Amino acid sequence: MKTRKRIVAITLAASAGAAALAGGLFVYSGLYDVSATEQHTAFVYRLLDTSMRRSIELRTADVKVPSLDGAERISNGYRKFRSHCVQCHGAPGVAPQDFALGLMPAPAALVATARKRPAAEIYWVISNGIKMSGMPAWRYRLRDEEIWDVVAFMKTLPALSPAEYAALDERHAGPDKRHATAAQQAPAPAAASSRGHGEESGGDEELGDIAAGRKAMQQYLCATCHVIPGVVGAGEHVGPSLAGIADRRYIAGVLPNTPANMLRWLRHPTQVDPLSAMPDLGVTDQDARDIAAFLYTLRAR
Image (tube, rainbow, N blue to C red; front, side, top):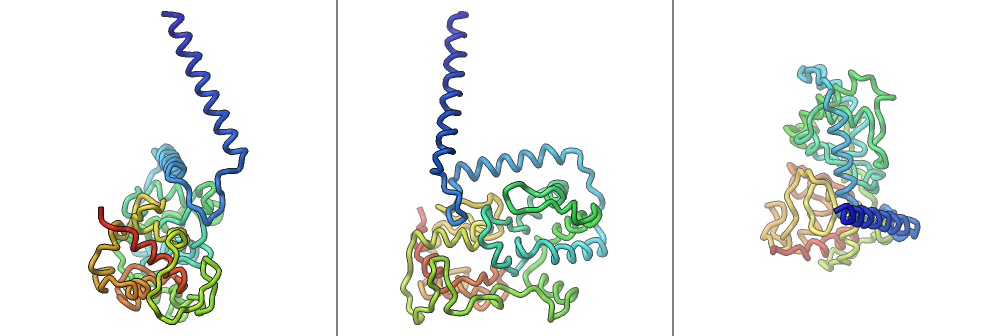
């Protein structure tokens, strides 16, 4: 019996040592692509996401949540949210700024976060930030009470339509200082796409490169709102799954599903449906053609 236990222990130790050596060699080899144009593998993404969630849960068990009601608290939270949060995360009907579209991992869609995550966890993340994500620790820039104000406002996000958020924005900031939508900030027709050439192609229905479209969907933060087969993304979503979109009769429930309409929707969704929660993301013509090519590979199983 002792011999068997010894053999098992030696075998386990040898296996662990071999795994550690193999992992070290893989890291040292540089084979893992760290560029922000390549998504994490599903395994790496889930590993990091699970580590983050479990870490937050462990550290928020004793956080005392104050009352988050009250118009003044929510109003104060909106002003801080507008100043510090919407640039990376966007808001109902408002796209993040251009620099945030290229972040990896992608900034979360806060409507989904507010709907599913407890107030204590949202507070902790805002206060302490998240390593290697671009999320700063706001505790060194905002008072504790101000952070709770932001949490209070965020908890109202799931109930706000794009029109209601726009009205709130105008009421607090005035029409000249509202958040500009990505459509207002969109690059000129000759602006570069993620493939380096964004010129208009004359309005034809020619689609682009499937592999480039898959990458572009990551760069435009599509996976923060939608489940997209083949694209690694957040586990909490505010939009419908795009699985099987190639076989649907309509796009967004309003447009017949044709290549021309798909390109129109990807580039200017709020022109198609002003009430849509999908913001204009400034998608270039070439990127839209690439994304459409990828979307038309997503057929119902």
